[in-house]
Length: 160
Image (cartoon, rainbow, N blue to C red; front, side, top):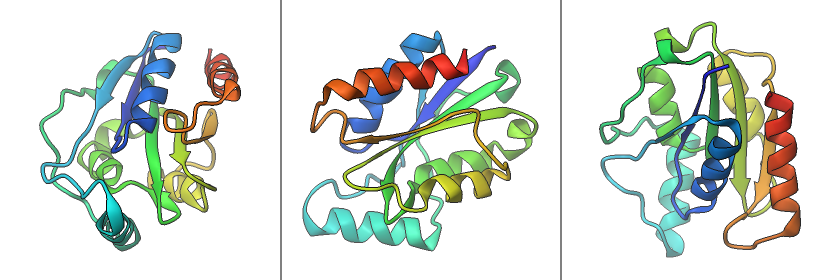
């Protein structure tokens, strides 16, 4: 099954996991980034990122290459902000909504604590009752754990 891993990463946690997942699945890796970067440190990081997530913002994205017709499954990767998925992913999904119809989806979430309602919010936004697989990782790059590789392997195996 031809798969794309589409992700947004601010601090590198989601990027690290996305690279590992794409490698294990033999998937194409598609990084999305907002045209205007979010503050990446201090109080402003949490204020602006959290506000954007809660308000359902759809920031303009840097150009990316993606053709939904080339894929049967999309694996989304996102940090968790204020209990939700990151706004750049919202933009990507809106921009590609017609092409995403009828696709299979999986998702992974990187967070410092719990994922809150991020999994449900992404499922609801995509309009799907369930993901083929879902994974929550706690700061896989910032706080390496021996469990991270095993969790990613299990996630990938469930998609094969």
